[in-house]
Image (cartoon, rainbow, N blue to C red):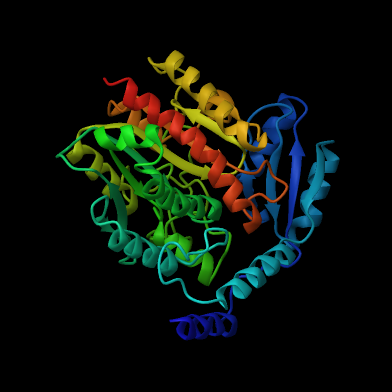
Length: 421
């Protein structure tokens, strides 16, 4: 297996992996509404090929953007001529990517895990490693864990969901997904750790045991497998799905703008080359449609948590409208408890609130759709960090991130269990 992986890695090296030499990540800080508008306009300047890591939100709130080397001079002139404050967060993106790759290759030279106890949760893993982990976890815990295939991706990869259940049929359930945006690697890594944590703590942690004695937990670790595979094989910065767009050279749809909740309204792009391209229609992506069909057929999901990175935020609906969610007071109070519990471990500080209030208008997002399906406890996490590493969070931060996030997840799950509706 490792020989095949090494051969695959060599082929990629020979055939060419997209490189980011000289690309910088700039942090822009708009000081007034005029500067905010100018930065927003930059999103549509296709010639610059900008990649917004932290999108435009509000005055004095940082915006992080990856600028290709060929656009750097023009972008800096644009910013300086308009007196927009900016600084360099990442001097050369490729240097960081090379360090990440070297660390992964070094770790991969170790013995292949024979079981989930010997699996290395503190490093980043490939698509195949995570799928192998899922199979091992099910084989080791047949009374608690099963694997459900809810569909297939555009490129034919199975969409695996782990079901944690102590019995019963169609019990109230909690859904957790990670990795819907493929480049947010700390989320898939955390999801893998969560799976092991659930089987380890059942029967030991009274709170989790009570939850699982009465509810099921569904966990989709690699929600966008084509994109995730592509981040390892070809382009580490890939965010979207991998389905071609007819009439465009640009591939993929933003799966967090493809849901039927305010679809097509401001807060998503109609341009197939945009990182926030919503797609031709709601649920055009099988990765989204499979979850939609599962949620509808199940009919008894009580909490839905979709996990992203980065920015350190816990968000609830709505994103596409300023109309407050009818359960806003309860959602806000629970979010506060969850981030307080999270901070108790390492002091990591999170912001919290509705999507549109805390970050920006976003249409067609996951949790707006789930909330409108009647799933009251619908939340989105944005994990570490706040931009120093961005999407390239060092592997040394995987376990701290997963462990602190688990405390927040437990707060949400425990509240859901104790407050049936």
